[in-house]
Image 1 (tube, one colour):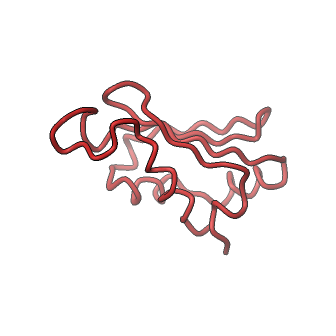
Image 2 (cartoon, rainbow, N blue to C red):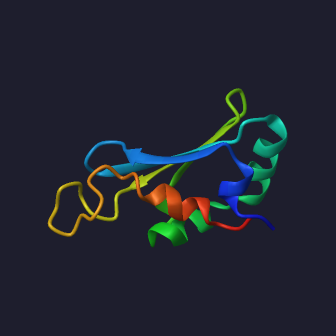
Length: 99
């Protein structure tokens, strides 16, 4: 097992509108990409966001060596309970996942 953030080139999260977040995992090469596709489960992403895994959309993009997840934001952007207006801080939590 290894921490995802140490294997890949970059993990990025950001808003995809006021109701959705997107997480992009840039693998850098085909070998790392294959490992991430094989070992990273959508349920792991769901656990980070305390989300239902059925609401998460996963996109494996081999031509770019990227794995992308889109999911509803835990809190609507700008709502009183929103602690991350840009959705950027979630990348650090995803990068800490063991695969």
